Image (cartoon, rainbow, N blue to C red; front, side):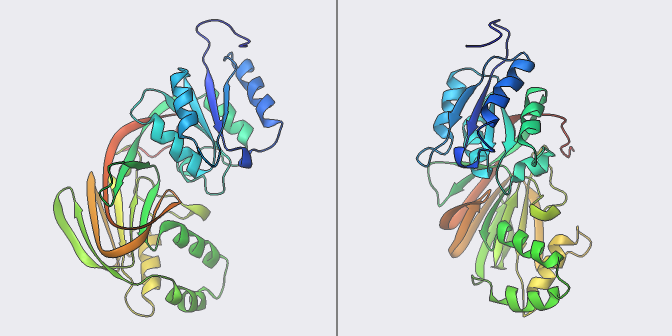
Length: 313
Ligand SMILES: [Mg+2]
């Protein structure tokens, strides 16, 4: 029962991936945080292999809580957000994964789950853009909050760069390692906001809502989660050292972009490939696809966090 039975008491639900739980003490600590903040006892809902978060988030929504906290990795965040977007119910984040990409981009504490939970309860609400993807003309749209990749994608890129940073011999690493990366170039036709922008051979296309990946790498340095625009990047390495040019182009913060990296922004994008490429949304691999349609739903998701430190336009 709630410690504070008043009708005004706010309430939270925690949708937690039990495999990533920071320990048995986390649940009683969270109940105590709620009591200390004058909130009702929270709903505690564990995810499972069969239901990684959608059912739990729907249950929380039906219960009329003020905030649904996604306590897990990027997969849990995406499932909860898929239910909460286009509603007035806020999402909170207690990052328990390895990537925690949305949390990193929003400046949420990714090292101390109790502090992150306290920040949700004491936080304020802010609205962020949601990107909606339709894959191979499926009826069902999927949402993502950080980045989608076709072909050579963000997560691989981030891992590579993270390794490179600590290596003196990174040029050799580029030459031997990146040259042998999987995948062959494909022809991509990319239409942004209904205009034919690009028709070229690429190794990968990325579509992003925010740009920060692991290790402080920013793949879309100018991206904002509140500007109503998505950022699109094509990667088209040419020749033996092509990946080096791509890396310099992507990570040169815009100073030395080159024709092997092309960036665009828009409200909608359609990407057609001449043969299937692996596809991922916020790190969830969804298999091969040849067609991707993405639209921005501006400020469709409310985040409860403290303090808001997101880039605004
Ligand atoms: Mg944006």
